Length: 221
Ligand code: UDP
Image 1 (cartoon, rainbow, N blue to C red):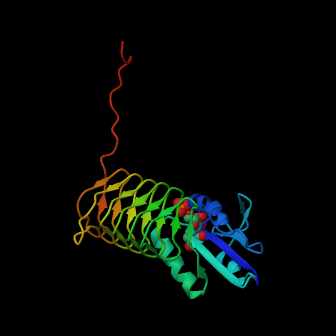
Image 2: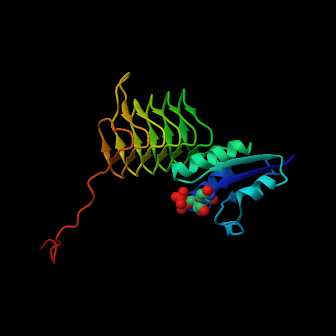
Image 3: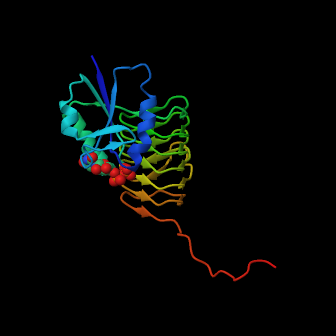
C-alpha cells in the first residue's frame, strides 16, 4: 500500500510549505510527494512534480493526503470542501521547531511555519495558517480558515472568528478571562496594526502607513 501526499498550491506559500511537508515523512519510503496546482500542472518546482487535482484523484496510491497551502482563506474553504467531497484525507504540516504547550487543539489541514509558538489551552479551527514567527497566547480561541502573516503577536484571551486575516507584525492586545478581545468574522487587520479593542465582523483595520519625510542634503556635521 503506497501513499501520495500533496501540497495544494505551488505559488509562494506552497513552495515555503513543501520542505516542511517533506520533513514530516521520514520512514515512509514509499510516499510520493507532489504539488497540486490547477494553474501550473505539468511544471516542476524545486524538483517536485505539479499535477492538477483531477489527476491527483486518479493516481494509483491508496492513501491520499493533502495540505492546503494557499493564503487566500476563501479559496482554502472552497478547496477544503472539495477535499471532503472527494474523500481525500486532510494533512496538517507543522515545522519541526514549532512550540505547542499544554491543552491545545488544532483543527485539521493547518500549517504552522517555522518558529511559531502556541502556548497553553488554545483552541484553533480548521485550516489555520500561522506564518513565520507568529505566536498565540494562552486561552485564545481561533475559528476556521484564519490566516496569520509572519510575525503576528496574538496575546492571551483573544477570540478570532472564522476567515479573519491578520497582516505581518500586527499586535493583538490581551483580553480578559471571560471577556476576550474579539476579532469578528471575516475582519482583516493590516500589517503592523496594534489592535487594542474589539473589531466588528467584516471590518478592515489599517495601521498608520509609513510617510516619506524631507531629507536634508547632508546629515550631521
Ligand atoms: N490555485 C489552484 N486551484 C484553485 C485556486 C488556486 O491550484 O482553485 C493555485 C493557483 O494556481 C496559484 C496558487 O493556488 O498557483 C495560489 O497562489 P497565490 O500566489 O495566489 O498565493 P499564495 O502563494 O500567497 O498562497
